[in-house]
Image: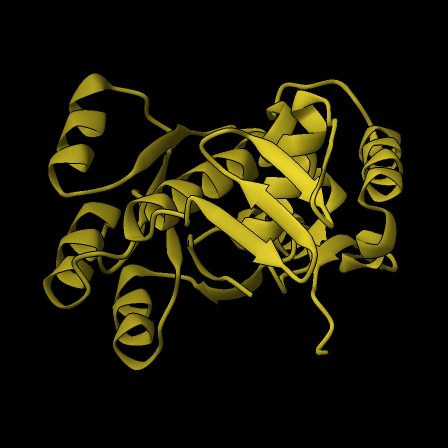
Amino acid sequence: MYKLLVVDDEMKIREVIKEYAEFNGYEVAEAEDGMQAVKLCRDNDYDLIILDIMMPKLDGFSTCKEIKKFKPDIPVIMLSARGEEYDKLFGFELGIDDYVVKPFSPKELMARVNAVLARKNASKEKPADIMKFQGLEINVPARTVTVDGERIELTPKEYELLFYLIENKGIALSRSRLLSDIWGYDFFGDDRTIDTHVKNLRNSLGPYRDFIETIRGVGYKFEVPEE
């Protein structure tokens, strides 16, 4: 499970972000100012920081600069009530990964979090050309899937869904996260879109349908049982 640190002096904003992030399957820690954020980052490991600019004690720019001294690779998304180009450019010069202007849509923010983490993982590790799970085989360059040696036909979205689940093997993925990452955060579908595609995908996988597990109240995950 990915761990996020949300840094903002406004408690209501932290609460909204935390609610949406936990719904999307993230673990969330909070800091109410920059000094507290720096201390938390020294003592803990986080996968991404959501960081407000205008804060007491230590502003977001100074906080980012300090954290990057000892954790230079940690992704940062900055929040600001100001949308001036100077602020954005200065933030990117400090090494931030994205910039969101308040007021913002929590759904869009989560889509940006997902995108930043996906880019980080993609740069860290390129998937194998051939992925095999018992009799289920995925040829990544060819975008083909075979079940016990027989090629199965999947729609582009079914393939993307399967590949995304496999990339995040063992991680419970919420329906809203699947929608935003595969269909895009501005897609106006609902949970039934995911459920329908999972149903069709399971039917195509035949004896390996149970590799896609339903996580009650959350969504789905890809898990291969031990033989």
